[in-house]
Amino acid sequence: MKRFVIKTLIFAIFCALVSTLMPLAVDPYNVFHTANIRDNGVEPNKHYIKMEYLLGNEVDFDAYLFGSSRVGALHTEKLEGVKCYNMTYSEGLPVEHLENVRSLIAAGKKLKKVYIGVDVASYTNPHESHHADPIRMPYEYIKAHRLDFYRTYFDPAKAFRALPTIFKHKADPGYADIFYNKGWAIDYDVPDMAADAYVENTIEDGSDWASEMETELEAIRELKQLCDENAVELIVFTLPMHEVTYKNALKHGYKDFLAGLESITAFYDFSGLNPITEATENYIDPSHFNAEVGDVMIDVLNGNEPEERLSKKGFGRLCTGDGL
Image 1: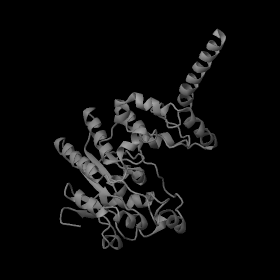
Image 2: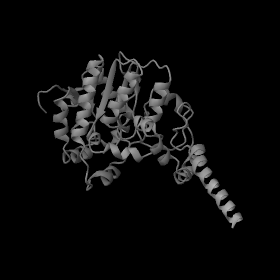
Image 3: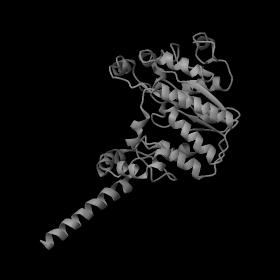
Image 4: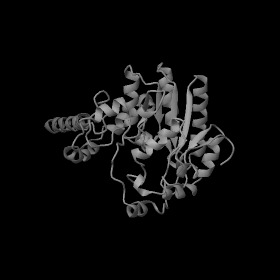
């Protein structure tokens, strides 16, 4: 009996070590490599890693662009008058951006401008769902709930499932430099998605989208107040959703969201039906526009008028409270 107990104890210790050391060694989401991120083919927790990097190092950025993975196509080094870091992270939400800006201000980071990109995904994803997701778990939540983080992250099954991707992936040697010094995630000349594939994936969304509109608009309102109190210019803009996504968004309160947004702050509107959003070749998948479109948007954010074919369709229109 004693020998059985000892063997059982040894086996239990072995299992505990595997459960701890396997996720730690593989670290598929790079949360233990915030200072030396690896391009391993697995989507990292960009939210946590970027905040750890920015707060833990002397950086010379004086502006930050926040948004979901969709703003990953904006090469923010092209924004004029600032040195802007692209904070893009998966399913980034205004409530999370608000906490990030609070953290940056509290840490004494230089802030001249804050850019926020929003669209239908900004109010249809419950932010609480990110608290159990190792890819999307927010920086401030991890700091305040370490046990929840470890319980979620130290799952050997997730580490094992990531191994085939990691072994097959060919790393980009320039990945870390772009991640730390620029932040954007979508480079130029990425193949576009075929039109029929896009329609097949998005033409009808029968899901029951949760509405977090009031919560997210309130977060933008608080962010505007926070920026005003700290002499930071807040620049808000909508993202150019593909026409199919845009039409679906209209069924889920998008016009109400824009009206609520306009009651809080002026914003540049890149959404709607226009030559950009009606051309599938401008999109690399059902959710993300390409970097070439990002450059057109940055040109407007720099104060330039879009070309006539775009402006006459309202692309880049500055909404200032005069109605939509």
